[in-house]
Length: 110
Length: 114
Image (cartoon, rainbow over all chains, first blue to last red):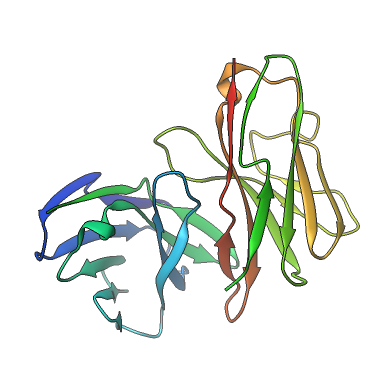
């Protein structure tokens, strides 16, 4: 089955800097890649997603890139703010089955 | 998106007891799922809750331990039976909605078994 790896497991950045989280997947049939943000005490919240027919997608300070050839995708957060501090999960989907990465704990230092 | 309400949000349970978690969605959905998130870990799919039929369980999860009901297209329950401390986790209800069946999560039910 699909295997999703996520790096780094923890990430600390200064407020205003950029943060990048990377995921790789193993099954080239995966065609949908969502990212979730989980704040302490809350459920995961979808923040951005990308489909396999698109290379990049942006939503304000958040962007996701996809390299199908290399089978990896990344989350980019620019101008980070303290409220961006959370755990971020990537996922890859095949035929409505979702496979999650192990999570990245992001800390934005004021 | 979807509004997904879970009850209870948090509970402390005695080992050997069972607890039922309820999930209510703001509108009808075809696909509902239950996930487990152990402390500091990622998300693991327990089962797909099928309306009008038995749930479909993932490897490592069995109906006797995690019975699931899905009486209609907006509601489901997950019971954690005969709990042990290893069952201490966040249990998340999720639904698939929209183009490509994007999945959305509830706020989770945080269970601690003592």
